[in-house]
Length: 371
Image 1 (cartoon, rainbow, N blue to C red):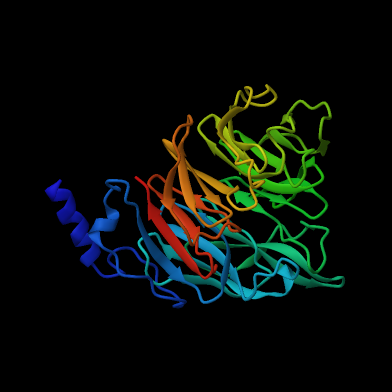
Image 2 (image 1 turned 135 degrees about the vertical axis):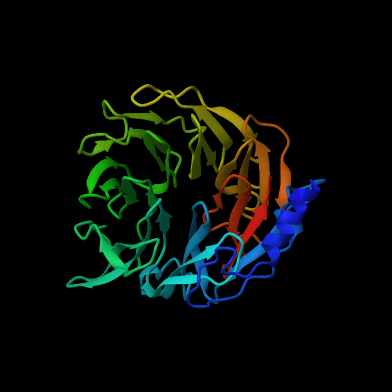
């Protein structure tokens, strides 16, 4: 143990360059790192530190092995998401000086990463006005370029930007006409996989992609093979590559989903937190298991669950009143990890030992060590 502490203190004492921090445009300096913060939590105390103070409002984040990527905007007004100017940036998980990827990003709303690239949404000028678009940049640096130029969200001004996830071979995006697209990175040719009526969340596992339709109580969760052929499938339609969870009691207003191993987790605003063991599409998943029931006394308007992430053996979720909490993956007692100041309107991220989140003012990116 003594040797480990000495090593950690040496890491803290090294310069930013020696520790692997990436140089770039300074958009806010993080607090100094302490060796104590790198140790596993003890006695129920979780270490939280600020990685970046952006100066504008952070809208989304994504995590890889060494960095946290985020997009920000000058205004977080849902009625005007395409008319705001912000940036796409990356910061080391140890903190330091963020590296700006795009300093004039308009309409940024989502970000995703894989081993080689970072993908983020913005807007472009067209004959029909400003339209949502997807951009990408190599992690090693270089120019930002348009990704999948033929991808058209069907949206105009004042509409939500696409929601992104990525793996090593493809990007997944939702669009304004309520379709889920798979975009192979090699060809950048969008393939429509699923049509619904109201997208809220997507999640991916090594073999499947999941989509939740969730702003009403006629919702469903679709499980689709990543190698599914082209063609749009609607809710309830016979399909060789999609299965559905459509019980209103467990998918009424789905806010967020996460996958860990062979288990899918999701929160139903008026039902609670659920899990289901996956058997691989087109086989149906096991029956949903309730891990944590919603509080019926306030209709979840105050304490309702928002975004979720998994750091085995626990599941972490934010709440509408700004807390970060955890519960064992198999169910059990709830632990408050961060009591306040968590923004419930921004996705959270996770790796093997930490949860990454945005402050309630949406201008700071933070890391909480949970293992």
